Length: 122
Image (cartoon, rainbow, N blue to C red):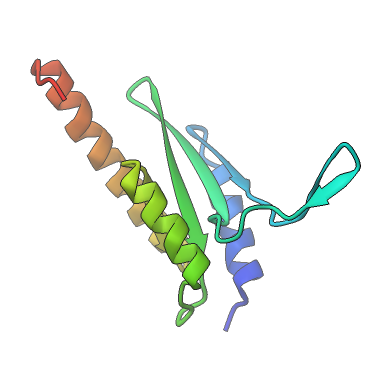
């Protein structure tokens, strides 16, 4: 069975091999501000994925988990926050899950753009 790090590495290799995608790993490391170290936000998704589609950039968050891995409470809270802001959040366990998630993101983008083109007002 692959570790989360191995799965994540394969996913990032796949994503960053796509010319229309820019994906980065969000680090949970601490940061410094005026020599004061603070921990990064708990629960933030592992990956931030930007997709250039239909001449727009679409962003989603992906949490990488092993086959039976579960979200921690802090990760669930981050997921709910993103959903509350109408953002896109996916739990992925393989490159195949990522391909499916990108398909869903494209479908959502199509629906949004189609409504705009039809003159729908949000």
